[in-house]
Image (cartoon, rainbow, N blue to C red; front, side, top):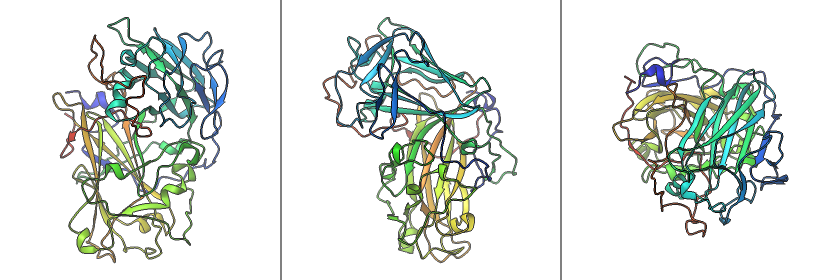
Length: 468
């Protein structure tokens, strides 16, 4: 098994750590983010997507001088595609090619890669095995978008990464077909580069919450993340055009990830409640629509005491994960401290006790968030595992209501430092390809909307373990 230093050198051996609920005050709370880049790969002219964003074609683009590969068009348009842009055209590569994107200032950016698996010309979707590197980090290896999409019943994939661009002020994104067969090729439909405020993923100094000493556990500024889940808990999906801070994130409905029949209850903010951002939680942290809806355990105390409100999230095994939980009290009856107090459990360990959202945020309608870090182990032959997030009333302070609440949940996979980066192969490469792929006729078109992570459900990891 790999050593902890190869996975995440800035962390001591741990099982579960947390950072403070409210982020430090930040200087940049601007709602505008300059320097955004959107490339509609394989296109020759600019066009708008369903959110009204303009995507530039990569033919003769300054970001792809002497662009290689072949411009191609998908053979079939799945009904679930939000629009033709940037899904219906692709750049197909038979050999390695690098896009180079200037970045307006050093710091973090979201890099989003859009893949719509289809037949492109005489290229089969089954033969699209390739890797992607960016900023010196391996993002994908032996990746097949068709297999990943089929595993999730999706028509297309959006892979989102957070990368730190150094003082070179350039982000190079390289696509490389896998070795082993002349049939293998790489492709991409859309590339998006969005600079993010420095404080969105400001370096944290978390502390142990498992009974150990409160030793600092800094997360390095240079650590790359991959977005695995971004959920609007208790609310509807939020499209990129409705995100805050012009960051164009997607927030999904959380209900598919609820465990068992314990769905709790969902509700929106009361009519006279206003979401009030502050310097410690600026609007770009999450849109008001996330904080304006919630899921709680329900109004019956005795029922709440007999179950946990639980989400199960399949992830790649063997990585560290940053979990960001968003909170906001939005009901008129919850305005004071010690009215709703609860535990937060992650993988059957106590991440937080005496969680009092009013006590932490300062009042009704005021957002807060909590960041937690977990490590997952990879057993023999195990490529996926499950993250369990659960809430339960904490009665120690004799609160008025025996209940718990959550408004939003984000999960980010953290880069390894042993050469793997963020990459996990989709599956072993077969020389004959796979027939279980999304085909050009639309036979596999009964799809969900989109996903950040190409994962099949994994087994339960009952408890976190220290990395040996």
